[in-house]
Image (cartoon, rainbow, N blue to C red):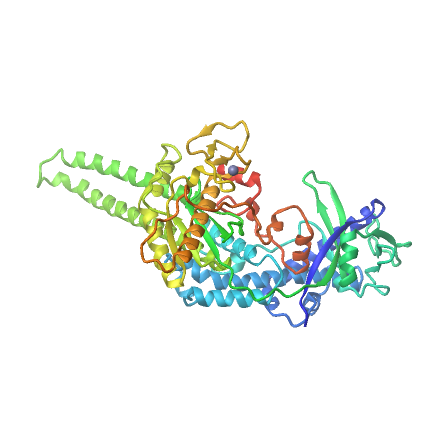
Length: 588
Ligand SMILES: [Zn+2]
């Protein structure tokens, strides 16, 4: 069987058809969402695929909530089924990655948890799952799942017992209707479609409700003629056009428009069996975030979107515990003063002594809780880094050496003091310690790097760069500002992200150097920001398009039954989006 790839090209429908198309999308969306709600409790049924078409699984279980014709229902069921299949797949991945995330962490409901698995087993299982489902966005998708799990943890102090505990019913917010459930061509009942390659156009007709919501029996005649762009014509000469998808695009200002995604299946040349690609994950101790991580290849290209682990909610709880301890200590001091009014052996000391014993137990309990959370955080951060390495097929993790201490925090408040403390002390040591043994167990290399200059150098051109209060060009320059801007080449981004890239680059430099000097016995100097030979010119993240406005890739992913509805865009605790305003929210 020759390899092929699915591509999708959105064609904007002509103005004359826009209102009709949006009405059909609205009506379908209601049916699709009702179907999703009805079938969500039976999600596991979608974990196995007995048929190519998702609608067959749906229609076997349920009928339409409001019928607009059998083939129209099939198309709606197809979309609902794709979403449920995607979610069922995600649920399987969730059960795979959860044990790795949980390793070494406090598990209040231990008896319910599945047996621990090691990274190799999880890696093999993830590979198998990915192969089952082999088009695009894999690692990005997994990263989003990890983020969702960790956000749940940071909010609730435990991981969810069930996937559905952290994932609400995924309802459609914008309309989408895959016509794959209909026969199409000349005999379709929901749509008709034909490509005229000679005429470099295609013809479309579709059924829709009128403004009163009544569905016509007949057809939009004459059919709509949609011109085909050159790249599509070119692709169609070697490929094949599949059932298209009607989709709605909502602009930021609320304007809606309907597009038809042409879906093409084109042959691809199988890639030659290259040597295993080598990748390095770099991570940095953030100031605003606990850990920032990213993945680069040996040429310095960034492969993954940045991941920020911001412990905001946990910071608050730790600060609260610290304040509580301070209050208890003040009470102890008062009680001791009251007790000491009387000499030793005096009976009047007893009431205070009793209260003091209770308070001291309470203080000890709070300290234990506080330490346990720190320990948990170290495990969480280490687990995330190892999981990211697994997802992105990384074999070497580079982190800043512990010799440097960052004397930065967020003010004099209890929270600020805690952040400063955790950046400087125990928790960094704990993370390094935990990460080291976990990497060892997982067969990953962990290599420390010189942190000097990593937060104040441009990751793209390598020149020294300053950091600023915010991304605005007029922003005030600060020694430890959250935003790095390079005036030599124009690169700008979150400072912690720049540092993570630089550390990853140092890791690559180290790797390259080790290989070149394989046969030398003399130890050589570890690369520094001054001596490292490469920079990170480009970002080539697979699946990046997920975060951009609708593009053909997104259409393709939707076509493949994957829908990203986990709310990471609004998340503030753990993030990997690249857009500047998300960074702003994170850093501000
Ligand atoms: Zn630069």
